[in-house]
Every structure is written in C-alpha cells, then in structure tokens.
Length: 405
Image 1 (cartoon, rainbow, N blue to C red):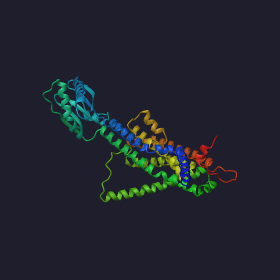
Image 2: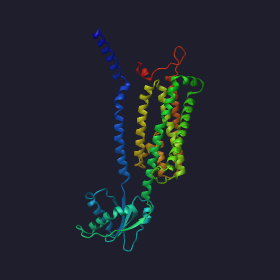
Image 3: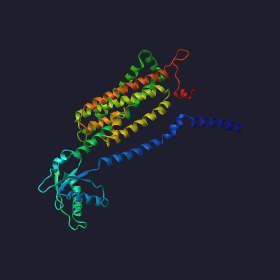
Image 4: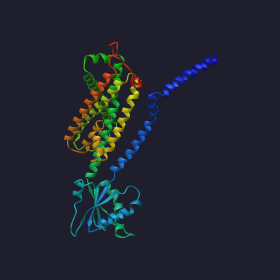
C-alpha cells in the first residue's frame, strides 16, 4: 500500500513540477526578484550621474592681459591635488590697461558661470553668492599665489563681492523643482492607475462587461471607464492633499522650499494637473488593454508586470533627459507618449514658453485615443468573439498562445 501511495505522490509531484517549469509565468517569477535590484542600481547610477552633470559649477575669469590664463593654468596644475570638487575656470575677457569688467552683469545674464574672478593676481576679487564665496576664497587665493610663482610663500587676500542670486543658482533651483514635479507625478500615477485594471477584471468576472458591451460601443465603454477612474483618483488626491495641509497646520514640518518654476506657480500647478491626467489616461489605457486579454487575476498580475517595469524605465529615462537639455535624448523623452508628461512637466519648471505644452497635450491626447481604440478592438476579438452557440467565448490569453496556427 505504501509503495502505491509513494508512486502516486511522485506522479503528482512530477506533473506539477513540469507544469510550473514550462509555464510562461515561471519566467516572470524568476525575473521578479531581480527587478528591484536592477531598478535600485539604475536609480543610484542615474541619480549620481545627473547630480554630477548638474552640480559642475564654472568660475569666470576677467583679468588684465594674460593674468587670467595664468590663473587657469595654475588651477589645472593643482586641481588633482585638492580635496573635493574643483570648479572649472573659464576666461571671459582679457582686459586692457584701465579697462573694467562688470561681474554682476555677467552673472545676471545667465552665461553659465556661478562666480566671476576679477581684479589682479595680487588682489583678486571674487563676485558670487554668499555661500559660494565662502567656499572658494581660499582656493582662489591658492591658485593666484601659484600663478604668480611656482613656489608661493605668500597668498593674496581675496575680497568678496556678494550678490543675492545668480542665473546659475536660479537654474539649479528650477531643476530641483522639475525633479520634484517628475517624482510626484510618477508616484501618483503608479499608485492610482491600477484601479482601472482591477475594475475591468472584476466586471469581466461577473459578466457585467458583456452586458455593457452589448449596449454601447467598446471605445466609449473604455473611455468612460478611464475617465471615471481618473475622477476617483482626483478625489483621492484632494483628500490626501487636505489631510497633508491639516498636518502642516498642526505643526508637522512641510516640504522643502522649491524655486519658483519658469512659468510661475499657478500655471505650473495647472500644467501639473493636466499632465497627471494625461499620464494616468495613457497608463490606464494600457492597463485596459491588458485587462481585455486577461481572464484571471493571475494573468492580470503576469501581464501587467511588464507595463509596470516599463513605467519605471520611462521615469528613469525622463529623469536622465532632464540633465541633457537640447539633445536628442530630451526630444525622444518629449515625443515618446508615455514619457512625454514627465518630460514636459520638467520643461514647465525650466522654460517660460507655453505653446509647447499645448502641442504636447494634444499629442498625448491623440495617443490616448489610439491606445483605447486598439485595446477595444483587442478586447472585442479576444473576449467578445462569439462561439458556435452564439454566446461570448471567454478564453485565456495563454490558451490562445498555446493554440497552434
């Protein structure tokens, strides 16, 4: 008796083992634990690269004759021996006798330098923000002494000329605002878009979706579901925002102060609302297409995971494009529909022009309609296709994939 039970247990174990090993979900099961590691590594490396790209200040030099060139050569000779990051030095002008240079006007026009060194090697003047002057005075003195002689014994005093703000500091502040907008947009979209998928699967389970599909066109049904879930999401955001405001008024520490975006806070908030709506509709339309193919919760989880991972990759792509203004990477992030809302909210923080946002919103809305239409057609073909009995035939997407051509 015992050997028969063991033999039966072995048969069942072998059958289950083979079924799991050769199933399509097992591949995603194996890859699943790797995604957090890959995403974490990519987030760390991209974040470090973006920080290096953005925090690379330059100091302009405007001195008589060739004293500025000598200061730059001294900086290049000593940079490797100094601790911490050493700013780049750029010669802005070589002054003639009696000629002066307006360092404040140079900083105000946004030439890209964080501070300007004027005067002479014997009496340099550093013009820049308060915090930067304190950090760089000793460094400028050392470089000036080295520029005068190869073996300096005396170091000149660097006089500070403080300005309230510079174009470079304003740019860095707006970049921080752009990053904050991207992160908030991503978190809200990922947190709320899943409701579209769960709602569709639930109605498919109790066959309500088939009754609705018999009464109205599938495109209208999908759009109605998208906008209904978007409205629910906005209610949730309003409740969370109200609760957060109450906590701040009760004494909780608020968010760090962000620089004013280029379009101004009122327009930035309106664009943030519109881009959240577009990001939600784009991701929700993709989830609806997935829900149209899946018939069980297990299939939903398996098929939606690639879309979720894609959304993470899109967010990283838009964040990486933030540090590459004017390049093909930035244009690709703007034109790719799913990353376009994240790229354009960053544009709103950095550039004052409004007409690109009108074009971007129209572009994104067009893609929402296209994805909804394709998802509705896929749903009609895979779920509502009538069988021989005239009733809708509901087949698993994996069963269809296993069916020979």
